[in-house]
Amino acid sequence: MIKKILTVTFIYLFYSAYAFSAGSDGGDGGSSKIKTNYEKAIMYVKSAKKYEKKGKLEKAKKKYEKAQKLLLKSNSKKPNKPDTLNYLGFTTRKLGDYENGEKYYLQGLALDPNHIGINEYLGELYVTTNRIDLAKERLEVLAKCNCEEYSELKQIIDGTKKSKY
Image 1: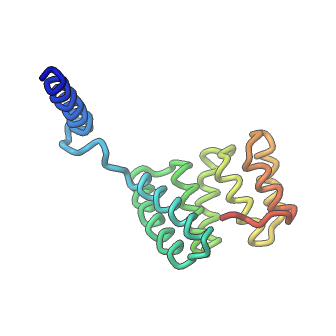
Image 2: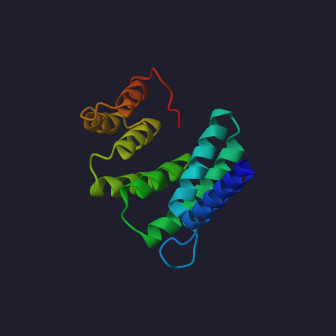
């Protein structure tokens, strides 16, 4: 009998805590589990990368398109966020629009010149568009970070590694 009471009490406390934590996110009646457009976009980007690795390029393209739409919404609501601009550049580049992808990257770098992701991906874009000198400038910025993005971009520039993305 005591076991049943303890079990019921535990279940009640567990679900009460769960219901309380999933309740309000600041008084607007919404759930704290609702993801922002940016967060949803990142999920699509990660999914697209997986499809791309498997060679399922059409599925990847659709995921990149969905991510890009969400990132555009996010950027219009909260403009000038380097991370958002990085992923806007990334998705735009992955969809084959190098010119506008570069614009997003450069806009992000104007806000955060040492942004690791932007410097790596812009460097990859420069390699793809055969502007190796500009890619080396991005590599020079990354040399200070002691990060894997530096070695990955260096290998891509040297031609010993193909761009993952």
